[in-house]
Length: 134
Image 1: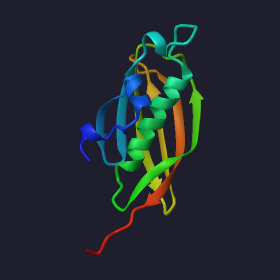
Image 2: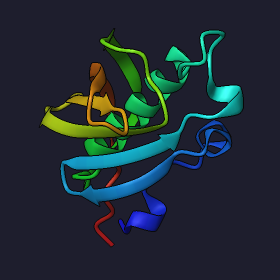
Image 3: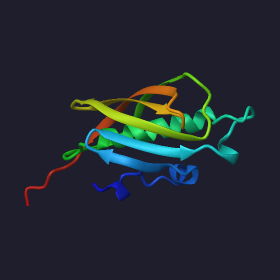
Image 4: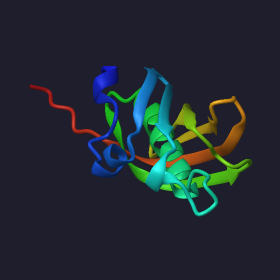
């Protein structure tokens, strides 16, 4: 998987302007610029945008080690919002463990000053791929 193909084929992620900054096995770093329609009524990044950024970063980290399996979807996403989000957000996702049916990931989103604005953990369903003996 190269860095250009790691972002899921998602119109929503594309519309938000999510960008892959860094990717390697077990880890993904994404960014988003919080402007215009991505802000809430207080002028901060909308919590749903931060949640999506973290979900995608964690999922990309989770599926970065796939060979005989792929992630089939988010089972749980737990977020703690710690500070208002402003400017450019950077989210780092890390794969903690992949079992037989689930993968466990964690990460955080930081603003342009390095302040942690949100932390997340997630569980993803694993789908085993059919392996051909041909």
